[in-house]
Length: 248
Length: 265
Image 1 (cartoon, helix red, strand yellow):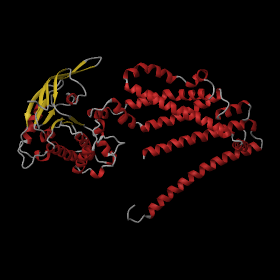
Image 2 (tube, one colour):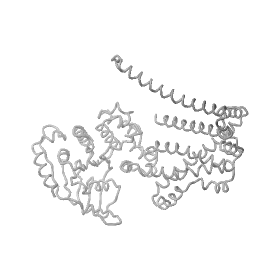
Image 3 (cartoon, one colour):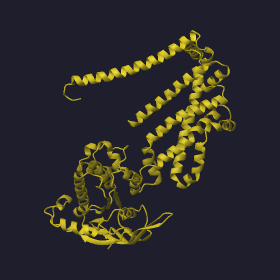
Image 4 (cartoon, chains in turn yellow, green):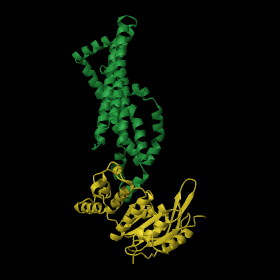
């Protein structure tokens, strides 16, 4: 059986005139069908390098990466283009892929209505709040109907309140649309509240240190907000905190 | 704006602001009048030498004369045409070259030292050679105008282009954007304001090029009027030329400001 994403013995080095820098060292992991996978690691350990590899912006020095499906990338910042209004910002991906048609536009209208942005369709980015901008960025990513979402600390530029709200939205969208996702973060609580499985990376060069299944007992439907109230939440937090070993 | 009645304090505030604005305008106009009036007066009383500084009335008379026989508009037309050609060709060519440099880092690095030297060189020093190469007349003058603005346009535009947020480029690449798409959908629209600023600077530089060119070779144009007036010691002609030049440059600058406002909307 094939996985949406599979990395086998992937290494990546960066070269400068002064030195060779090994960033990823023999990395192997899989993303299962319908799963949200978290990648946690100390800052500067090479998390972004993994995402750049997965979105084919760079290629590995050695090893194999198998990807089955289209990738959608969600960035730390919204990167909305100030001179385009909201709808034109959202369609930029389709525009690049020359896939704008009646069907895709209807799909976008639906998403805009669903996430409370319909009335802001013709507004410009500077007229929107941080949370709304990030939701626009998410719809921009979803508009090209990717199978797998890569989330690169997508909430870290938001204030705490908005952050919880937007992560709730994003979680629901991923589940409702039945997509897979890889969430890269250094925020332990965020990871526990969203992911099914968490991979802990070591300091650079990054290796897989350990993998944890996150099973939370939640009343009703699981969401990042309700997950934070689960009795196991604290235990996972302690385990992951120790694993990440911030005191090293 | 809202249903609250406008307070008396607010009205006073508005009044105060308008009063100040009026006061400034009155001062500006009076300063100009005082300057022109005392110039005229001193000239008539023979305190200053009209042979060297002319007088406002003499300049005015000459201006009317040149307007009446239509030659003023011919001179303005030629200089204006040369300037417009100079700055538009200089700007467009400069931006095209900047795009090429942005496209290929290797070319940019190869050409870098040459641009640095050319940029440091005072381009007016090249004017005599350019006249020889491109020929006297409009062609030579336009080439001088282009040469003055071209290098600075290339360097400024290239610098703007390579400083566009790398993460935004990455965002477009994540959708599979080609280099050409990155150029047309990000690099150019992100720099509209900067390009307008380059145009503004180039208008000024082109006027310098055109006037220098007309000093050197031409038989018509504002620069010709000025240099001819100087040669035959007709200072009223020189002053009129400078005055007309100032008005033309101002109008052109305002036109660009207007275009800028239209684009922003």
